[in-house]
Amino acid sequence: MARQLIEEAVHHGATKTRACEVIGVSVRSLQRWSHQMADGRQDREQNPQNRLSAEERRAVLECCHQPAHQSLSPKQIVPRLADEGEYLASESTFYRILKEAQQLHRRGREAQAVKREKPAEYMATGPGEVLSWDITYLRSPIRGSFFYLYLFMDLYSRRIVGWEILEQESSESAAALLQKISLKERLKPGQTVLHSDNGSPMKGATMLATLQRLGVVASFSRPAVSNDNAYSEALFKTMKYVPSYPSQPFGSLDEARQWVNKFVLWYNQEHRHSEIQYVTPDQRHRGEDGKILAKRKQVYEAARARNPLRWSGDTRNWQPVKSVTLNPNNHSDEEVKQAA
Image (tube, rainbow, N blue to C red; front, top):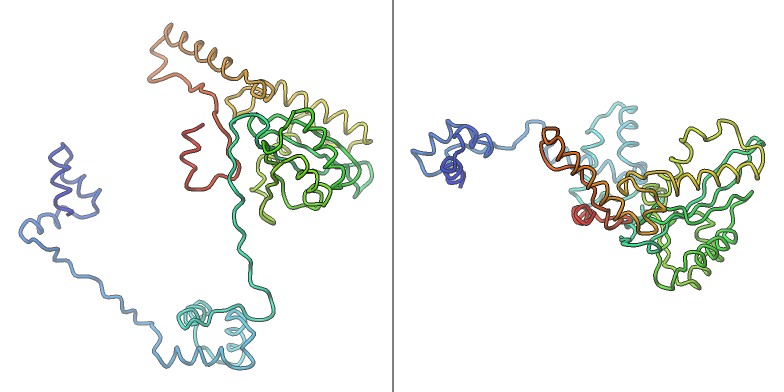
């Protein structure tokens, strides 16, 4: 098969040396194969000299079966044996032998680790389809005390659709804010998915009851996996790294609300977001991004017509982003890129 592929590549113009490099054989091997039909190379025999004998492997298993070692892992057994002046094998060898003997199980009373499935994938092709929310701390004048910023964003447009700053975290406050957002954005039952992490305000009884009453589908991150709520985390980073973010704690709750209100207005109305082709979230939310990007494309085409030597290929891609995916599965990453 290798000879046939190389001959086909040479027939289409490739050099024999380059074709051999791609296949992974030397030119000398190809010359030998031209005089014989079969590959004459000898397979390497995998028989390491440091392989444990059957008796040594049995000694490792018997050591693990001893009452003093039954509840210990190999990482605990091997140092204890060394303290007693005995060496049977390394920790990795212990693990390998136990696995081959189907005896590699969790030792002690610790519960078996639970495999967390990745949250379901949701794709937003318009405003109001997928929302994300979270709570972040804002420093208050009292050391160790914080103000809590509740912030909801629309994933499709990246627009901040609702926020509030309170002195405590509660499911009731989050539910009341969601109710206001639902009325303002005119969300219909069964239309919206709301994603969040696993905090108590997110999974409180009042919040869950409100989600069910409004017909909003709940989506939650895996425990201790912040990347599952990456959109809200990225928004908080943008907020806390803008030059105007105060270096000192907020003096009062009203002061914190005034600053966040200015930030939200700037973010929604002026900030050109990199993930939506540098239009503002408000422009995208209103569906104006298509006309804006088409005008940009015309500007670039006109510039290339005036001076074509400055472009070696097409002008910048100003196509609108068609969809945004929450928790994309690995198999569909390429499909998401094509859709965008």
